[in-house]
Amino acid sequence: MKQEKALLWTLAAINFIHIVDFMMLMPLGPQLMRLFDISPSEFGFLVSSYTFSAGASSFFGAFILDRFDRKKILIWVYVGFTLGTLACALSPSYPILLLARVVSGIFGGLTSALILAIIGDVVPDERRGRAMGLVMSAFSFASVMGVPLGLFLASISDWHTPFYILSALSIVSMGMIVKFIPSITGHVNSGVKRPHPFEVISRVTSNPNQMRAITLSIMMMLGQFMIIPFLSPYNVANVGFTELQLTYVYMAGGAFTMFTSPWVGKLADKHGKLKIFTIFMVLNLIPIAIITHLGVTPVALVLVVTTFFFVTSNGRYVPAAALVTGTAKPENRGSFLSFNSAVQQLAAGFASLLAGFLIGENELGQLTNFNYVGYLAIFFSILCIPLAWRIKVVS
Image (cartoon, rainbow, N blue to C red; front, top):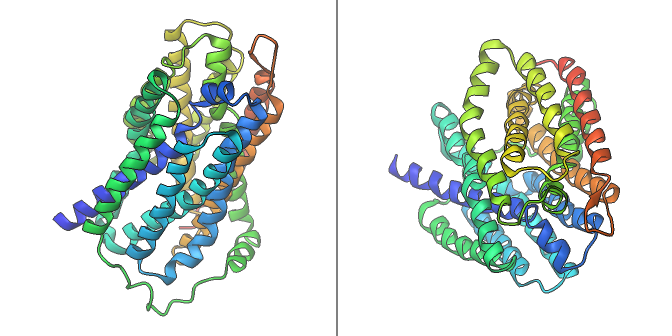
């Protein structure tokens, strides 16, 4: 049991570093746009480069990673991730940073797939839920502590500092992998036939119910990732935030979702996933509409709106994830979810890229057309409601 706890804490540490690495770039947008003299569309491409590469690698990795000892392949993948993060820290220009983000995304996507695979291999089913909860709590902790601390360090030094610290933490966690994660080879000689990637695509696309689930995932990503990457640049350029005050947005949002996520899960079990999903999706439209139309606004009022945005965004995701998962039978669930995860990453990348092309900049340095991005995000979010009600849970 002690060995299992050490393994789970190691995976949680890896997940924390990976998530902070992914999230850190978005709140650094104001600094990067200023220092590299890049447009909103170029910044959107910078954000989407990570998600595009992570989406591609997480999908194909699901069919390649099963051929190797989990520990050995995790070490090699994590070396690549660490080098990619260090390359971000050392990047002197926009093109080099863009390339570094692609490398980080490739290995970051593989890291996520391996974390889930190791939990599935090592932790018995009766304890797997709690194990997932511990490892996935790294997301909330990254929002509450990792990103705000990184922003604070960037505001008192420069944007390179958070990535140097993440590189150092990656080296420390590498030692934890070597020490606490055992060799895991039971899956290599299991005799199970691994489906070819195109088999998975064919299986999903020929299933109307799963295609509705995939479409729901895409619409949800479009509704959120058109907003999230530009939340920080817009708050600084248009709302009047300092770069240091951005830490409050992520700290408050992450802290509240740590408490509301379990509550939403209980509500979904008690009152039905579709009903709770619909309620939170409708509520989520309110902060999207407000956020994308704000002018200069007191910090406290903005924090109320952004926190409501994070809470309702998370609230719609919890029942939606359960709905999507339930469209696949147990024997096909792993391959379906790997495909769905990859599609989500690609949709998030496309959303940030599309928003970047729509958003402009005026002579005062303020961002323009964010209201139109908000209208599109609301449109995609509304489409999710009738789509979710057409999904049938089969298991």
